[in-house]
Image 1 (cartoon, rainbow, N blue to C red):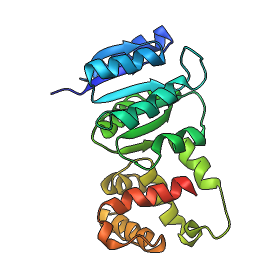
Image 2 (cartoon, one colour):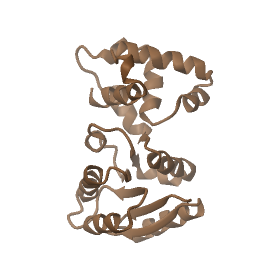
Image 3 (cartoon, helix red, strand yellow):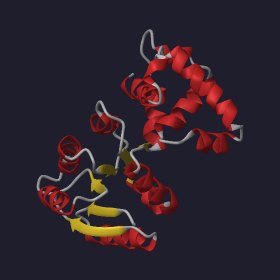
Image 4 (cartoon, rainbow, N blue to C red):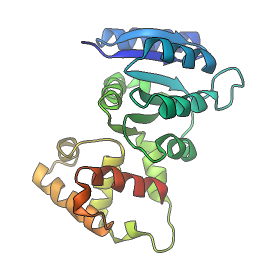
Length: 216
């Protein structure tokens, strides 16, 4: 069964372009919205797998899309949310992820032109993963604070955590860094240890590590 998508974008040309690209990749676009209130209505009516949402939308053309995305996250957690933004705003990403890094993504609109990556982001969000734009992750990585536990990480461990924050699996990280999955697993274990994430949290440690990175 193909993934069911609602697209919210007020620029008709861009919206139609995304519809065509997604449909060509095998997704089913069940509804389109040109403003935030219509997005909420259509998500409620169609119950999609993923809502792809522009940050700036009518009626106010400020952060209406983001606020609608937060509403969807709060009231319909089963719906994945992928937000598209013109600018790399860390605050938007932090607000969007909140306390739950599952089924959510934040990408710059420029990424849509790399359609393979865009389609992969939609799939990862639908599967309950986290996707953050590499530019936003890079900005976050550049921030510093006193007594930051991330300062204990080696450069390679920071690189691995950065890729984890982009939503990549250990295998995907291994392919990008041209190392073995076992080497990545070793780095991930070291990250968990240095961030003092207890073993009993299991797979949830991966999410906690990313949240620690985002909130620093």
